[in-house]
Length: 246
Ligand code: PEP
Image (cartoon, helix red, strand yellow):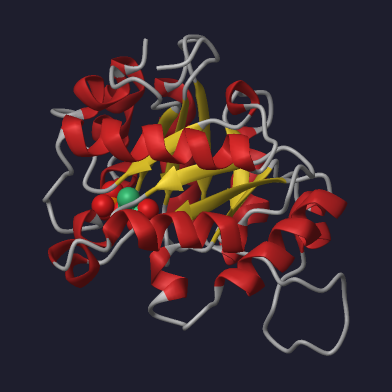
C-alpha cells in the first residue's frame, strides 16, 4: 500500500431501485466510520440523487459508473460529467471491462471521457485489465499497458487506475498477490512514463474482492485501494472489506 489512504470503492452496477440504494448507502455509511481509508460508492444513475441525500454528512463519497465525452448535446440516453458533478459526485468509473468488452468502448473514447471528467472537476477511475485469452497467450501485460497508454491523458488532472483482470471480475477467481504485485509494478512504470506522480495516482485492484482476501490484497506493494463489485452490494461484506483497510 502507498502512504496515501486507500480508496475502497463499491461499484453497484445495474443493481438497486432507489429505496434499496438508499438503504445500502445508509448501511455503508454506518460501516465507514474508520478514517483509515476513503470509501466511495457508485450507484446506478437513477439512484444517484437519492443516494447523495442519504450520504449527506457522511464521509462516503459518490461516483458515477460512466459519463459521456461531450459536455452536452444530442446524445440520447447519455450522462455528462457535469451532470454527475451536479449530483455531488467526486469520481467517475471509466473503461470498465463491461463497457470495453460489453459495449466495445475503445481506449480513445475512455481518454476523451477522462478529459471530460477533468473539465467537470471529477477524478476518473480508469479500469484496465487483460482477458483470459490474452493471459493464456502471454499477452496480458502488453494488453494492459496498451490500454493505459491509450486511455490515460498525458499529465492532465488527477486520475486513478484500477487493475481489473477481466477473468477475475465476478468469477470468484482472484488474481494472486504475485500477479497483482507484478502488474501494479508495471503500471507504476507506465504512469511515470505518462509523467504522472504515482503517489498522486493510486492504482486500485478489482476482481472478486471479498472480506476474506481484502487485507492480503491491500498489503501488496503498490495497491492503493480496491474496486469492489458483487461484495459491495452486501453492506456487511463491504463493511468487513472497509475494516480490512483499517
Ligand atoms: C467490478 O465489476 O469492478 C468488480 C471488481 O466486480 P467483482 O468484485 O464482483 O469481481
